Image 1: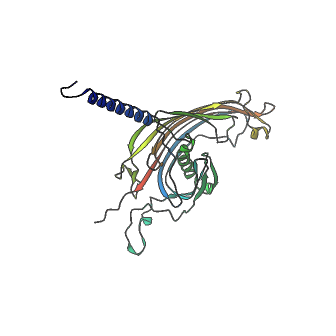
Image 2: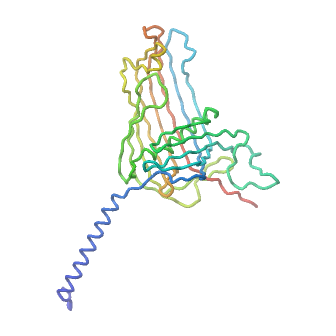
Image 3: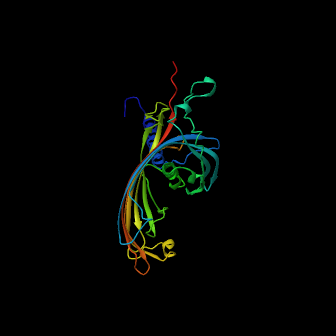
Amino acid sequence: MRGGESIESVMKNTIQLIAGILLLAVAAAGSGDNRVSLLPRLQAGQTFTYMIRYHSDRNVKTESNVATPMAPSSSQLDAHGVLQIDVLDSQVAGGKAAIHARAFFRNLDSSAQLKKPDGQEPDGRIPRDVSDPKTVEFTISSNGSVEKVSGLDSLSPEQQQAWREWVARFALAWTLPVNGAKLGEKWKSEQPEPASAPIASLVWERESQYVQNEPCRASQLSLMGEVSSGTGVSDTCAVLLTTASLKQKSSPKDATPDDFKIHDLKTTGTARGSNEIITYISLTTGLVVRATENASQLMDVTVAKSDGSNRVRYNVDANSHSEVLLVFAAPVIRP
């Protein structure tokens, strides 16, 4: 007890100190359980733009004693495009937004597209390729599935793949917990392989984790398509790490899908794969600011007639890398 202080004064100060500590403890406990929604906050009329880069290599080895004109072949695909998304409608269902949107690829290569009528100078907006105004309309439902897709077949194979890469990264937020996510939390999901394959019952088993928060910002895109670090307002992003494994639920001795059985075919073999996705989602807007994916798949399958004749064996080794970046147009510098 300091000189001049009464017992009542000391007790009062002690009680206030304890109360303060308890308040801090309650606040700390509450902050540790804070959940944030990582769904994009969208509304009709909103527009945003993404740069997509995609590269894949597929090596195929074939063993057969019959002609196989429809056999898959080795291939390499490079897709690179700037995709604008226009939100046409946004509704909330089951606590999650369902959106209807339109997308089209912009042209960055033609200098003629950079000129405005009546001698006006370009304004820094990314020009649309008016010579190829093909659009894709689609819906992302409240459960994250992409539905009612129209216009995709009119795009080139490279553009189709670029759009698929973008929508897969963008729709990730719909797979997160309905009540939001918190730092350090992990969650699992399972999804059937959407692509047709000669191996039945392939599913992706995914595990995601909200790893940390990091500073982030949209990238800057020049009129010639060059991407550089953004100079706009800095944001904070939730960093999500997703790892996935392709699992085969069918027996290797009889892995025949239904559409093969219809044509009196039988398949045997195995398939497996893995991928890793790192996604940065803005805590302010819910938009994906950056996402990268590295994936690999292996398949060893034999296709034959149901009586065992006309056997063809395929060994497929495929790898891919993709990057999706939220971008904005660089300002035009006038003399």
